[in-house]
Image (tube, rainbow, N blue to C red):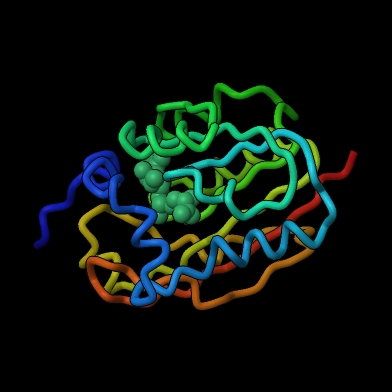
Length: 195
Ligand SMILES: C[S@@+](CC[C@H](N)C(=O)[O-])C[C@H]1O[C@@H](n2cnc3c(N)ncnc32)[C@H](O)[C@@H]1O
């Protein structure tokens, strides 16, 4: 059996090259552009964004408007890059950070390519609903058995979680893992909050 490592160690090691992975044609990363495409259709151009599992903060390159970004991530090295993009940073696990954030404290909550690392994604999603004032954009990766077995970090398949009242909810070809070469389908979900 493969010895697994923590997401913190994995992404600390990858941090300096993470944006190259996002742009590498072999990795065919689609979920970030798709998230921005969905969001940009809804005519929000300003406000606060909580980016959960933010990585290097590349999302901020893609949203059209004047947003203030806060990013949660377990990797301090990857957060250094997000900070260079103007993010306020929260260096904590998703599980710890979300429970400490007040109700309705960010206009928009994004969580892209991150819930696969969280065992209890249902609770994380409940927090996301509680925290967002206006809209939510989540991606859920359909991790295959082969990927779960071969990827260096423990991951879970949450792609079949029931989400009610989503305005957009569909699968795309999300990305191809640079370390295993396995291609992953990603479920893109957009929700607007009722006042
Ligand atoms: C695949 S990257 C996605 C980054 C960015 N959202 C994107 O879509 O490009 C996953 C990110 O989640 C972070 N991460 C993984 N597990 C985490 C956890 N339990 N708590 C906080 N961050 C975590 C990693 O450090 C990494 O930056």
